Image (cartoon, rainbow, N blue to C red; front, top):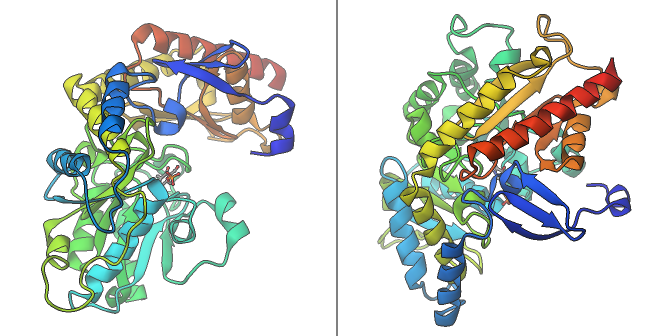
Length: 432
Ligand SMILES: Cc1ncc(COP(=O)(O)O)c(C=O)c1O
């Protein structure tokens, strides 16, 4: 954010519990976006705090360069038991960008040592975001965050995302036959299949406005990847750990990736952590071979930090024991229902998402899908008004997103939606 602006009225948080933050002035805010898609089990969960305290008494650090530790092993087992398919090998990092960088490097090295050294390019979506580091940003497709830092390394190919409401090919689902997925095969052929290492995708794209692929999209991508020996990487840094109504979006969409990236909600923000889980096929290309340099030549100092792992184990157990993915589906449905019953539903052109990640796109005219004049900064004004009234959301000029902790109660959803509705009405009054 622009610091000069922020410094005029800085929002400084002091404490938080459940879905509520309190700032240094004693004002309360409902956390409608789980920090930033992170605090899946809510703030100040006693079980996590106790697990972390116990861990600190035992071991706070053991670097991955020469050892591992009990909590990292326990977490690897747990991750392997909750991820779909045969993603039985796990590597830990400190956050999301490290995870996506590692996934793309793993794909390159995998191909190098499995007889396809020419496979280095990565295909990804326009409007996507895979992290702030140079490699992850190169794969990202969100113009605003990228152009200042260009040029990136070569080998990034972008395709249009499945934004059905504003189809890039001006088609309608299902008559479109999901061209946005099928066209990937043409792109692979033009680029040369022997040059493509991986396809990285967020199952639901945040920065593009909660972009939610239609049924059938991932089946087509999976088929193309299998046909051309391309690794399918799911960036589940936002969608993982119950957010979409299953433990992972891969399960929500019924498609198994070859590599799954995780971060954010992995330890619900109690400690920084990220990771990748990958398939047995990939692992076999690295494990126990005699030749030189076949181990994955990549790592970070804080990978597998015992305190972070203890927090993640406790957080994942909480998600499982309380069946929070199920609660996410119920809570998400309640938000959708409230959006449909707004006093001014005509300015919501499209509602999308899965589980408890719901986006609403603003339109001036729902029939023509005309957007509000750019200068109005409509969605940003609605989001800021809601924040002033005590609800924190994720907002953009043309859309707004709701993704509170999965533990949110129905009365708290009502509070969040009442304040959103009042904020929308207030901005509409000044807009007309
Ligand atoms: C989908 C996705 N991938 C990767 C990242 C990068 O994660 P981090 O900010 O933890 O490095 C983010 C962060 O917002 C994200 O939303």
